[in-house]
Structures are given as C-alpha cells and as structure tokens.
Image (cartoon, rainbow, N blue to C red):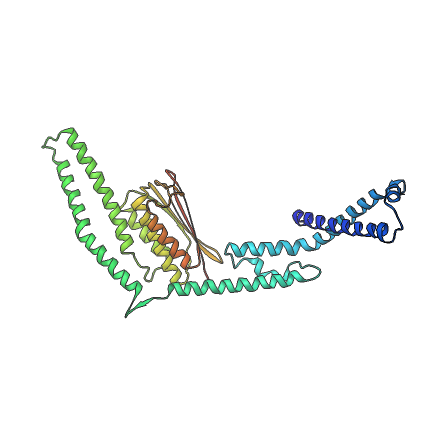
Length: 352
C-alpha cells in the first residue's frame, strides 16, 4: 500500500467529514433549533459523550474510505509513476510500456486512459529520438561540399603539417639526445646529464600529446569493421606508442552505421583528451548494449579537475563530446575530482 497516497486521502476525507458534520450540527442548532449547544455537549451515547462519538465516527469513516481508495488506486498510481520515471530516464523500451495493458486499473478506469496517453507520449519521444539521430547523421551541404567534408579536409591538412614538421623535429631531438647519452667516452657533468634526462622526458611527453592531437585532428574511420573491431585496433596501436596501461571490455554487437561512426569518434576524442590533459597511468574503455541503449564508459586515473570550475583543462574536448551525444538524443555524464581521475559515462538510444 502506498502510505503517502493513503495519508493524503485520509486527511482529505477527514476534513470533508468534519466539514459535513459541522454543517449538519449548525443546521440543527441555528436553523431548525432542535438542539442547543449545551444539550449537545451533555448528550451521551452508551455513556460516551456524543461529541466524542462524532469525532470517532469521522475518523473511522475517513480511515475506511481512504483505505478502500488507496487499495484500488495504488496499483495504477505506482504504474503511472514508474512510467513517468522511465520516460525521464530515456528508457523508452522498458517492458513496463509493453505490459501496460496487463496492469492494474482503477475501478473508474480513468488510469487506463492516462496510461494510454503516456504510451502515446513514449511513442512520440521514440520517433523524435530517431528523427534527431537521422538529422544528426545527415550531411550539411555548403556549396558542393558538405560541412563535414570541409572540416575533415582542413583537419587533415593541419595534421599533415604537424606530422611533417613538429612531429619529425621531436623525433629528431629524441635521436640526438639518445646519441649524446650513449657516448660513454664523453664525460658529461652530472648536472648536465640530469638536465638532458629532464629534456628527454619533456620531449617524450610532447610526443604523446602530439599523437593525441593527431588522433583528434585526423580520426580513423571504421570502414568495414565493426565498432568493437575498430576500437580494439585503435587501443592496440596506442598500447605500442604510449606508456599508459589500457584495458577494455567491449560488447560485440552491430548497430546502425551512423551510431557506430559517432561512438567511434567519441571514443577517439575522449582518448585524445585523456592523453593530452589527464597524464593518466591507466585508461579503461567499456562498451555495453541493451535492448534500448548503448552505454560507453571511459575511465582514467589521471589528474582530474574541479567540476565547479567552468574554465577547466580539456573542457573544449569534453564540450565537443557532450554536444555530439546531445545531438544524437543521448545523455553524457562527466564525473571528475582533482587527483582522482575522470569518468565519462555516455548513453545513446539505439534501434536494431
């Protein structure tokens, strides 16, 4: 039994009963004048003051009526409340919407009408979610080229210039430092040797950030691979190039090509953001799918950041991820704490 509903019905019924009793007593005393207040106060029933009998009768009637109504209304009330909660969570495929015809309905059948209205709202939300995904996946033309093609061309140009200039120079600097350290016949003062080691670490960090930046500017496409295969290949390649420990658990499932492409881009952007800003020792990637949504979770043990600060490091990349997820009708949660790492939790509605 729903105690909250019962309490409200009980108080409402009690107030109604007391109001009716007061009106009836007032009519007897002041209109029909068959009783006086003094005689009413002295009147007894089985040696019990009559005013106590009236109060007890009001409480008893309110208790019985509210209990009766609560018993017949609790089932539909809880069902409607659960449906609204699942709609707010975006779980449009929950079994409660499929089994609504089998649920309890109030004796006056009004809840059946409301339940049907909620199901129609759910159908509208599902259709809007699908339309939003189709719209987000469709190209936006600027002249004869799509907006995406123009952005990709410019990104590839910048990435190519960075790779041919900065990346190659960093590699050359690493080789020169290695050659200096390997010259055993040359005596190098200890302070200078320590300085060389620090410079080597700075260059190594710059190379990692450069790889992350190139991954962001020149993302890899899935082509004919599944989402799991694409993410696994990406992570395997990164394992050989960065010192970060990477673990993953990916569901082997085929989604719509547009959803898979967007999820793959989100993974790349999140990893790029982690490599550039988090300085993490461990990176975890998880992908799970149920009948209504795909859940992507990326966890690192890096520097983290203060959630209350608007201008935080890496906020641009996280904002891009959030916008991409929102455009697909999904939900993006970011949890972070300074020195404790960051958790990126994404849920996207899907249809098979």
